[in-house]
Image (spheres, one colour):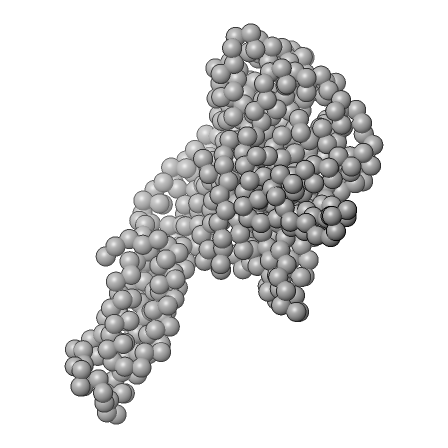
Length: 526
């Protein structure tokens, strides 16, 4: 037997189950049964997975012990002393260490649960698959040898009765193989999703640079924007931490000293984090220094409002849409500019220097919401032209009218790739299997802090095609956070994504009932 891709196995077994149930001749039924038996069973050793889960779980108590000892230090009271190269308060370091230890314990516990769930699913699936193969072998034995050329022309009553009985047994067997393949595939994807997420939560270790102390790394990785769950509003993503660490190590000694001073002189932990985020986004120390001058001394609320176009107040358990605005003006599209609009906001998410240019103007002090709206529209139109977008109307009154896939890849490469370090590739999704297949890549990307553009489509009552572009920007559990360039974010279940139904993030026009579908994704490749 050969090992097959899990999605291919599901597709093949679904097709063979239909072939078996509709087989109109003995030879057709034999061929379909033999083909089903040739499909490889679910892979994996549940005993090995359980052993690994026990190893993970054994670390939970150790992590909790570390947190208890850190918390004991915090309760004793700490003097207002500064530590590390970036001058962080000792109390902030202890708080960050406590949170890091808690996250470590949660990661080990979450990883153990993911592996145990996978182990149970693999064990059950292999039993189910074995039972299905027993039925298929039984049906194959009932049928005996293949009919010859002339035998296949006529089937008497006894032969028909045998064929129908064998077909019924084989159908039940193929159904068990399909259920086993579905269950094992779903469980493997869920485990991969959870393990990738927990791996991305090991944040302090991702800031791997020789020039920062452990205290510096802990404090920077711990900083979040105010006004929401800190874990849903972390300023430095996993990708930011890795890129900023590499950038720090590449700096010449003089630039490194300047960067150290900028961090040490920062007024708040949030200011430090945004300086590192600017470095991660690819800016030189000169540019980071200029940016730092614009944000220096600003409080945490001002920094969130000006540098975080999307902040999360509603967690994944919430329903409904959450507005994303700057002083009452939404981060939304102007006319038919959904592709450039979602790209503008995505860049502002990963690039704080760019975000400030939009919210605060050239010098960072122009807080007029109407001026913000003008700058946002100008950028959307600039990207529309950059991607050679379509236009409608007369020459003196041209208006944007959408953008094709090539243009979307082009503006993603120009506007996002320099600030995330990856490049984009377009991938069509023709159905549920395609969307299920790409989901782990999407979740890994957003767990690292890299937005993923997606397109949806619908056909109206006149069968005319309409398209819309949105951006996946977050993931928690089995929920995806989607930014719609209508100025909102929404948590959508993986199940709805696989079905192609993102009406919760858009509106009922893009529901499955109205032939709405997720039809294209733009995945970042290393």
